[in-house]
Length: 298
Image (cartoon, rainbow, N blue to C red; front, side, top):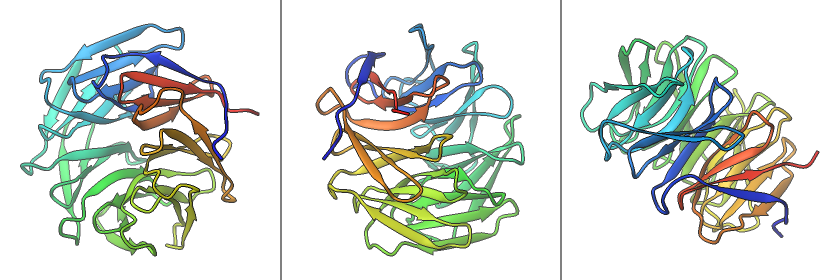
């Protein structure tokens, strides 16, 4: 049964405007995308909210992450660009060479660049902090690469939502595909855990997956297989947290596979991305126009 705990909701945007992805910035504030309004927003822990309008209201800012240059970087899924915004709110963007690429997941890597998925073109992209883009084709057709994470092995790991697999890409372009044991699992979010494994969610199967650097896969079924887990992130203690988009819950899983679930206070709030804040609390973006804050127990 889902646990009852103290979760507070912070209004940040108009209902349905789509707070989607959220991260902790280098300035100690929370940064998130407002996907349906073409905005990037900044929220401090004391409640100060700033919203920055991008140059296109329909650009579809999706996933956001801190960059190696002290700025925030994000994908623009609708106009096929990579965006950058400074902590002072100055935004720029860079085109992707392949038309109609549909960039989605993005992550910094230890090579000093950012790597991103291209949902519509079966490619992984790499962008330097001065905007130079390199693309790496995948051996899939219609695989729908979605989220991406930097692994402990100096490689990029990503979900192939429609190919039902986890991919691995080295810095020099070598690709390995790991099919999932469960059919039609449809993986989406992925993160590197404190145990040096990659943890991911299976939105189609209602499961949490774990893959080691040598390709061993374990799957953990959620109590509600229709809960549609969407995004996942790891905290410093080794616990992975995830959103259950279809069940209006947040969940957690330990490296040993122990699950907990937490009901969100607002019905049908559509939880998507989540992050551990600078205060150690968990923050989740709710598409209804709110940010949820959960303070984990000791």
